[in-house]
Length: 76
Length: 132
Image (tube, rainbow over all chains, first blue to last red; front, side):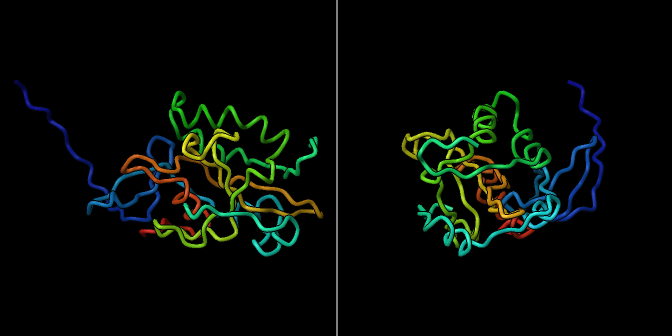
């Protein structure tokens, strides 16, 4: 059986970095077992999304003043 | 947005957020199929207020999502256990109009190694995952 000759590319990246591979962006995140893994990137915050659309983010207090109390199930 | 006697809130979806949240999933995945099925109705009719839940100030997984709201998917009157995914929204106001802006979508309780919709929403809100 022939062995596979694969040369690993060494990357100098850390948790929290964003990397681009073949045009797609990925977050470098913890795999929760001491290593890292890649996940499709989230690159815009809620504040940036609202700013991009020229809108203001309402607080939960403002929202509930308008629409009343919204229940929560404590899940997340 | 039509009204049907039940109070509803409009929903707006940015295409780049949709790509990040939904199109990252494989085309035939249950999650993506469920989200794509809901999108036309969400954008046309919005969300009934009775379907909306407030996200937790502090979740068991360390997420802090005060000010965000969620709806379980598929959107229906079925019990939450039959609706494994969620859209998470931030509330927006512009020119006096108040509506929901999609900020995250995903599984509520994913398999190990995959971020939950709550962790994704936390990153959108705070710029990093709760364990970072």
